[in-house]
Length: 110
Length: 121
Figure (cartoon, chains in turn green, blue):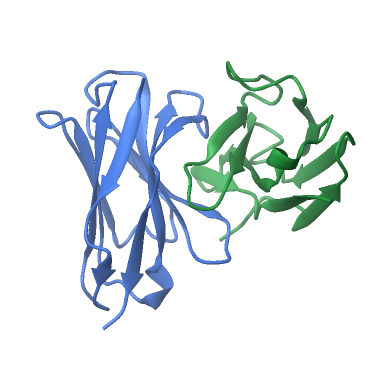
């Protein structure tokens, strides 16, 4: 199963800014929107970013998304201890004709 | 508020069929504009999209699972279901149901809490 490529881990201290990358190809990120989800084990994943850079209602503006070519990024500023979670990117893949997720990035707040 | 809840056996024997149901409240599976989607996560692994079904029964399945997957929608009970045939230990995972907005594929706005399924004899 092909995956979008994310770093397995990221870390930062409270108040810092952290960026998580997501790399794909022309058949997914290059031609479709990117979505980001926050997942705490044992809970339902939470939508964070939709359509590359839009935040659902209730998601603080500390979270921001961007996309360039076949890559995307999630930035979290003003890092808080409760941001500690797994973060996944996702995009439709035109070749697979299905949704591809990244492998997930475990964010640790030191 | 839209809520989704997975239900089904937590233990399935190898070679048998895994069957899960997702009960939807606060929204209608009959309404156009949404897909009803299944995703799973094996221990220590990332999220894997299994597939989705539209209210009219149209579906898209992950090619790696397509030969073993069937999804259905029951408008009378406002539920949708997943059947995964010929399971092996590799199908042991937490299974999530979710609502996916049409046509913005991959935009999953509401998720269930997940159902843990173990494949073991």
